[in-house]
Image (cartoon, rainbow, N blue to C red; front, side):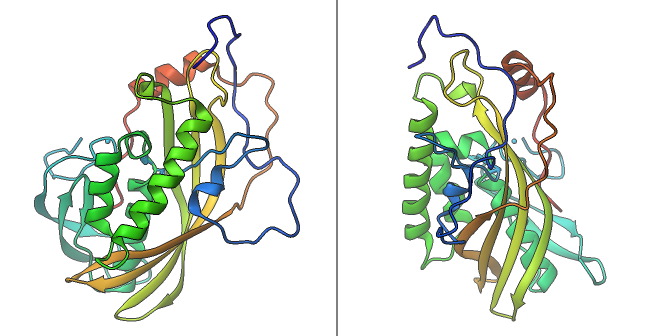
Length: 272
């Protein structure tokens, strides 16, 4: 719980300005992408954030953004951008706020990877276990679902404890993410491995928050399987970066600025 007389923390910090342990494994659980020195362990995305991604409301075309993770399933036909190929269409529907129903193509697998990581990068994904489980139900393979839920429940709990988030102050959490790029490591008709380079911010807007809103850059590797006529998430891992140089601004935004922006700016819609 925040101390009532503690001064407000201001500004942003990058989460990767610590010395690098040369013996650290390159791959680690996804939520370690938000770790900072000391006892503060923080996760990104998405954003997930994305996050949730957290862990965002559908328009008339039935697409949804991550802040509406419990929206009931609906269906529409949406244009699907295809990287390196002709544009295509897929019957896409919204299940628990997550777009599902991707083309059986490499481009469809890439788009699924981006949207699935965005779904995991919103604030609701961090703070609402029920919504988190529904999101994973919508996008995970039948075989991997239970393990992914266990992993993300453990990771999110670490994050919330480290940031002092409880049932009474979940509205102070800021978690946003955006995809900067993708890379397909391998592709077949049944299995695809896609890397998604994400930028995110996470932190709390409480006046004495242990972690002010801070920046993170993480690359997620998602293995997708073709199951029940859709691309589904099978495994997930992450590494830090690529991370840009800190600008070292002398005038970072205040906690109040982030609180206002988080209230006024809706998260952008999913890709496609």
